[in-house]
Image 1 (spheres, one colour):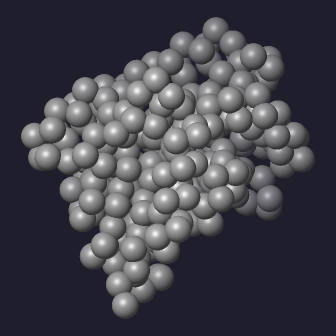
Image 2: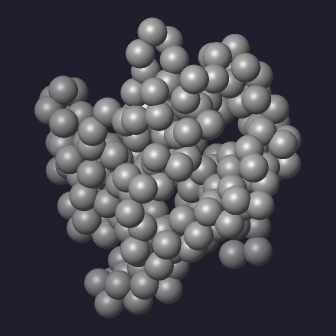
Length: 222
């Protein structure tokens, strides 16, 4: 029997903001990182992501550095504060309703995100989603190294990671949805049977309109 699969991007799709960028802002506000340098680089990388020019490995070297060599208890304490201060305020009621609809329809729900698992695993749990594909930070002896387990879950890497997951689970995309805000996700949007643009950037909106894909908003003012 073919199982319905509903796949969701996370940042600016299910969330009303970008969890990766907000983690950087949190680190700056708490004085954990060099504020001026980190702000400049965090904003630069985010703009490059929006523009479609991001070097994902350069960004990950930057964004995973605060995790490296920091004891896990300290990281978990920071993360708990971050979830309360930065993520809870950007949870979207309409996103929760959309997830409930697919859950009630018997679909398997999956988040697929370029943001690393340290940040996104508890967010997926907050959303009640058991399956998560995210960029995987490397750990050795219970300490993050600052490197990742290849490939990063970004652009075509999302397709590669999803294909591996489908093989492992025995599932397929014969009856599948993918919701995303970003043109960076076009490789995966082209694969599913029901692509949906959610509060899309201009490039994705134009592509969706040309293809006849649904364009929806999960924002209160959408």
